[in-house]
Length: 482
Image 1 (cartoon, rainbow, N blue to C red):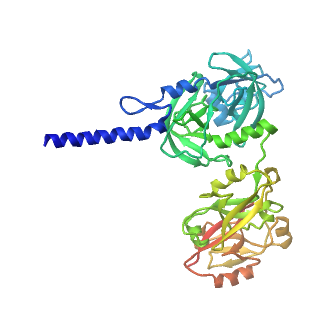
Image 2: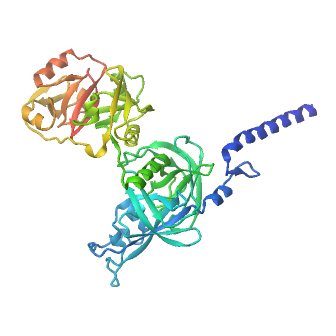
Image 3: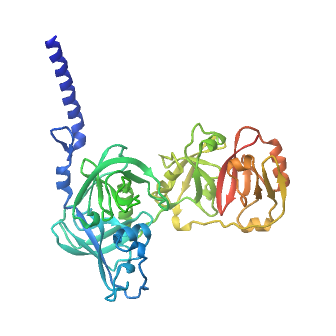
């Protein structure tokens, strides 16, 4: 019995050793300690010289004096600037105690060297409005930096110092990241030099308000004001992201940190280095999420893709035949699982490049080839109101005819406006007063009379896509008639 027990223990030990050996190639710099846990010491030592502190000087004298609100006094400057939009001139004190325009040096954030000749990546919000940018190296040497260019849409900035032979970061890719894997950050939170923190990747492709072109990497790595612009590493010592934002109610880390994928950041950096600006591909559609109710009405097995709510005139989408109601499933070979996946993919696609778009239209898969133009050719629709009236008890709403000239002035071929919504299918679908109904089940609604005729022929107890124009935007809603 004892010999058999020893044999089992030996087998277990051998299996554990084998597991560690199989995992070891993925740890690279991050070796394991005697307890089998990752050891980040070598990774930190290899990369601490590539991380820099970035400060700015503002010395313009034409800025309007403003008073700092009482509730913000004493809070960290970067926190107030980045999360509350407090302008930099409000931090500049005059001898009499008022905020003024005295030149001010502020320790704002971090950055990292990406080439031996001195190019450095950081956040746009770290260097915006700066008259001078100062980079402090690991050896405490300070150098003035030149601003090569910024891109507010991705919050990326490229600066350069006059130096050669510098250590620089190893750039990896964010495409291979997986939820649950280790990540490590080096930066200067609250001005504390070369602070190393670690955690895991907690989500990928995270869409944040007003950040359409960045599918953020979400981590629980402790990030605080001052980490902005610093690198996020994988365990191979490669930069996979730029630390950019945190969600916090206190101003400190709460386990929700967001980093810009390095693939997007390097694409921006190359364009800034070459042209001093960023040019993005533009398709010309307004999109929305595909809900479970809408997926049924569009003939999808599950909610997926980006639903085209509207196609703007004089755009590639219009020219190459994309239509409102199409659900885009793939763009240039890249799967579109949710609507927020589409903008960054389109934005990173070179202009004038022909790309294949896979979509589903009224239950049928179609492929369309489009050639993109630049983003600055976008257009918006504007809405307004008018009169005329009729009631539809089956829908549970009151609707009215619209003047053809008014419709034409808004870029609409037809439609009827909702003047009131009662309890019923319209309310359950999310129809609101003021919506202009354009199509129901892909059939045009040109007048109240046609609307009433159409209602008689629509199937019951099934989700039907209703396209409405709301506040200048096209939205599809799932309507189920009783």
